[in-house]
Length: 270
Image 1 (cartoon, one colour):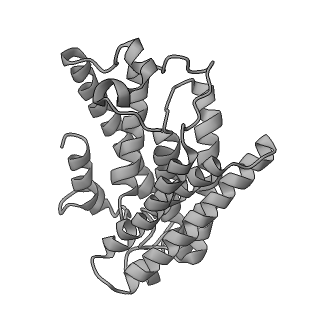
Image 2 (tube, helix red, strand yellow; image 1 turned 180 degrees about the vertical axis):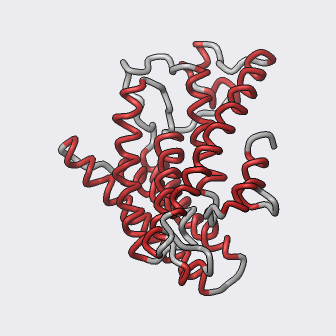
């Protein structure tokens, strides 16, 4: 209510100042993903690092479940993006097609970059790249053609790889699910490139970007990113600080070591 709803109104609501400015966000790249990524970054900075971070190996405990989850996301995202056309029409069909193209391109881009940097590809990297592609194409899905989607996917896969590895290591924060590296940075890449590759022939009159003769759209997209980052960071910081004072944010070290599934719910995921 305090973070998501105001930004949703700014971008999509009648009278929202970003909507009036002409921001392009078809299915929530700014509203959802940049918002969530920044909130996740604020959360991990306030909560601090997990015990053993930097000295212990924190790979997913079950890669099969991770792949299943990514697959469900990939399929479900067609509803997320194509459904934002609000009808079974050509706009929905194109949104679904570019979502598939960008996601596949991002998965391959992450894989090849990781392969070049670490001398081996990984399944975890491929599914992380796929999610990055899904995120980045979200704002653009109703405005770009397959060529634009391909470039957005490649940029997202490579860009989010470095955000989730090099940037995180450089700044030293513990973002366990790479909410900022994938959703935050991926959302920003997608928002900016929407301003580059949007075409009026796809999205309709007034929905064009740099390659369609409207370079000013990039500035509008940057305005949307900046406003979202600043508002979300400040509001999330206040909310987390209030919660920390009222009920606390960190569990006890023993609970963290044993795992929250077991300690809080009496269940273990094998």
